[in-house]
Image (cartoon, rainbow, N blue to C red; front, side, top):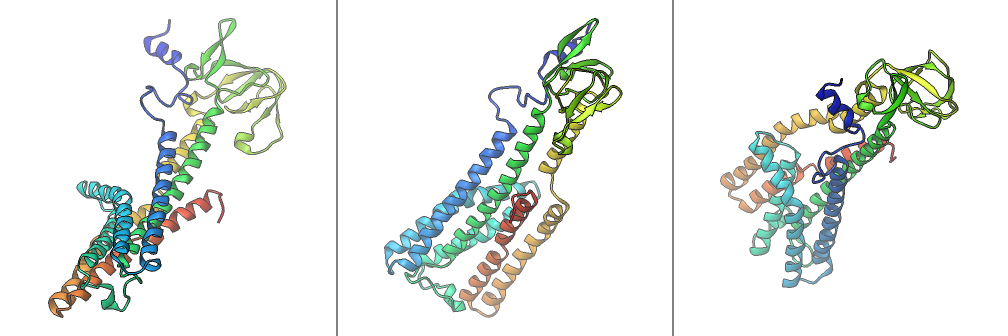
Length: 354
């Protein structure tokens, strides 16, 4: 007689086919696809805002309407795209961590604040202290700085999320290779049993056209088996008694009786799924190194920016140049190139191509 725990295990569906226990939750695949769509939406929103700001700067004559258009375009991107990044940076700081979000938030919000200050106080002219000037309509160029950085960062995160979505699809395809049930021998008959409830040493029947449910060794029957899910070899492999078969392989020509060598959680297929999940959820060594460097880089950037402000303003008395130096340091330190370069490298490594 089965124990309650064994009975419960044998009556539930296979873990490889049931991702959620309740219907009010979303699967990891849905969450990743939703995240990718939101990053694409942010990228498109930022691109539209950038076009509006550039049009206000260079395509329109100097007027109040050009300033209003630039403030609305840049402010919308800063609020809806930059706001969540700043909020994420604050949450990290509350837990004693500093990441790339802090650099992005510092650079973009400082640039937007400087542009807004130039709009309210036209005589400030931070850019003109460096000989850069405004756009043809008098719109501060800092508006385009903040919007462009946020657009690049959002697009880079969209590329990275697409790589994870592709990896998730690969996991789902692997999980679909394992059948939820198998015909296990019970006394003198074969009964359909959940794969999770089949113990090591049990005897299972694999009919023609069915997938091998668990890793095992053939005890009766000969057949050709398709093992391409692991080997990549399209030609089937002849199998006879005494030879091993892997879960997920397809039995092609004859019925087989297989003695189970490993439970569902220890098959080669289950190990491959775990490896793909670990690669997907973890970070490469260079990524972990970058995280450690950022924890030191952000305070150094802030210190350099404040030192520049103090020297130009308090020592030399040139507050326009001081404010420009403060903004320039924070904007230049923003990892906009890294935000696109790293995801692009991941996409190339994932096989999409340059």
